[in-house]
Image (cartoon, rainbow, N blue to C red; front, side):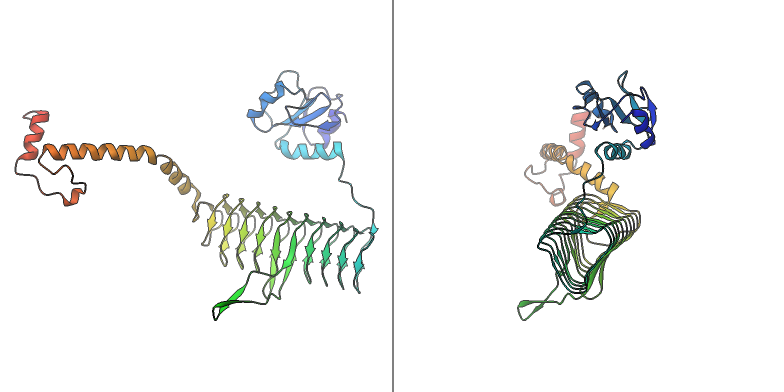
Length: 373
């Protein structure tokens, strides 16, 4: 593809030879003349000395080596995604129809151009929309509804009565609608609490590989439109996740927690049950959230505190070895001074020290600093 055409597709300003042909993408250090790459940080510019790309997608104002063709735009990462799709094409999709060894219950409805892979189980009263793709080895339980253009990768389990919206992506191994983690402790043993609710996933949601979204105990576990859930995330029963939230891998959200719209949750974060995270809040990686978070707050640490306070605390902690050394030196100085004014040198608690003899401090200061002391 000629650079001038790629620039138009990426909505970028072309600098250089628009007739140059590129056929693929590459990283800056491995790129050749037929490749295009992108750079968003100056630290990667040195890689252009080993790679020789045909073009670089870069932000306006970033200095590039002389003679390098450039596509300038405010968001090089997004433009590169457009270039990647243009040069490598859309992902391959299976042919419409039903594969071998598929088991289907009664009342099954399948929209136009849908595809079901081999060795998949489809329960009773399941409804698939148009262009739905279900890859092999999936389990779709009774009365499940899946909206148009949704993609279900292999080994996904969607249990009974769950609803998946349009244009969703469920990555391999994800579990939707498993029982919530609820038990009663009675007479010295745990008794399982019935989990009879369901899961509703709205349009344009992505669920990562091996993530788990538990069904509600009696109502609904809800993930609203546009939210993105990373791999290995645990969503507890009755959790409510707002629109366009992002939750990174290994995060766990306790039952009945509420995340308002546009919340961002870093990886390996734990959110306690029955708390509310306000709209637009940002939770740093490895944070333990145990109380409600106000809208727009940035939180970090375990337990979570305001982000700037957390950073100040971390800076102070890193200075502890120096501070400990200063304390040791000060203690030694205090002991020395105490001995010179008649206090027991072994006395470490200054509050318990006896009063020095009359005139001892004055004599000490005069000896060190002269009569004017």
